[in-house]
Image 1 (spheres, rainbow, N blue to C red):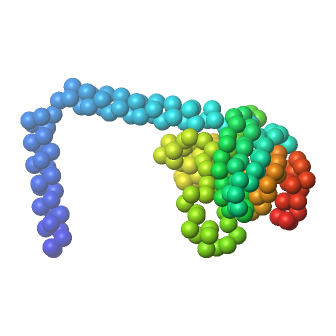
Image 2: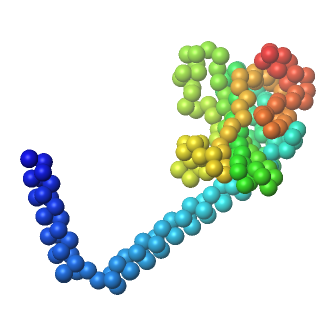
Image 3: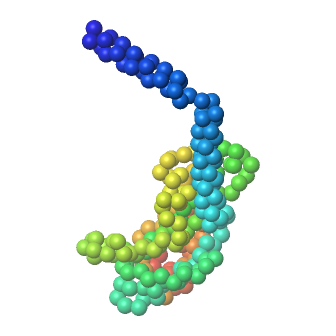
Length: 215
């Protein structure tokens, strides 16, 4: 009986509130204005999200089998300290510390209609990082030993949100990663991309020796 009584009391109160609203303040014009205002705000938000997504998409390039996405050259300036030149569509000069280098590439894969009509997957160079072989050195240097290769913060990064949401309806976030390749003075690598990954191609003897050590 207790819960029936509480339910009845709440029902009476809700009827009184609804009756007061209808009698005193309900107007069709007010409802229409409220709906229109919310629709305009929603449209503005959607338009802003699409504009940010368009800005992010223009940074991606088509994944083409065996195409060169950049060239990395390492110059040792001090023990475990390297100047790195990344030649791609833009030349970047970076500084890394450590014994090994890693690179991450963000990939967008088309699904559904996009895949059916033949749209090419896209890629964007994401992160170049150095790391130490000694765990003690790596633990102390971890916050400083990476460079993000694009200027998109995570809060408006299309790839980041697709990855977090796990959506596979139209676009899917994927990643290619190169891990634990030795940094050697004078080594030059071409970075070739394919449908399934990123491959370092040695361009000189120093790079070939580095890959032999990696293997």
